[in-house]
Length: 267
Image (tube, rainbow, N blue to C red; front, side):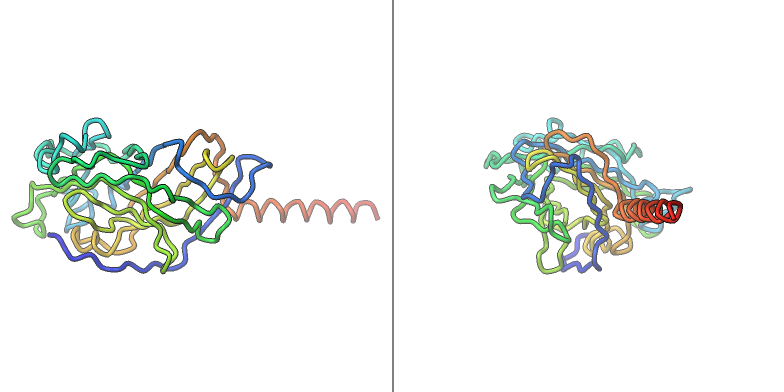
């Protein structure tokens, strides 16, 4: 069920800004203070794949999530994590991946390819697509199960694992992608509808949706570009909540109308 990776092209992404502080200004954001990448998958979106149904037999389902400690890349092989599945559906939300530092142990278990966060990783908070450089590594592995659907055939009851993710910016198509690295490298999801809040370069949060990549859609009999969940990338400490650009526009419009009303009342 594996396919050769192919280039994924997405239309322009919807972006929104919100600042945690009035003193915040455009800057290059980094991940030197560490953080997490939390995924909330849409259960029904995956259940409908591979000929499955959200109300019947799920085609694809979250079986088990191994956090950074449980999926220790120096001792837990890809095969061991795959064999450790329970073959029972579990909650597919709040899957917390831990960001890596600028180095990882070069001695890794079989089929594991944990990635370090590159020293040049950065996100431009002032660019239209939050352009960036380098890569962001993370730890944590998800095991998915395959339901007994007609399309599943001999794969019914089996499973796959995704993890050892790295986040990279595709400068040619101007979008961030989440790449699977356990067993083999494959672009798994594209990040879209991004919203950013930050106080400074070391304290920020990026949120948005996850879109199914061409390669992943081919493996799971899904639809390329389908919205399959949300993510929250948190670095350092941040408490502000992203506000969509439309809200800022509406707010400024209301203030303008109030100003007009006051002037008319004064005449």
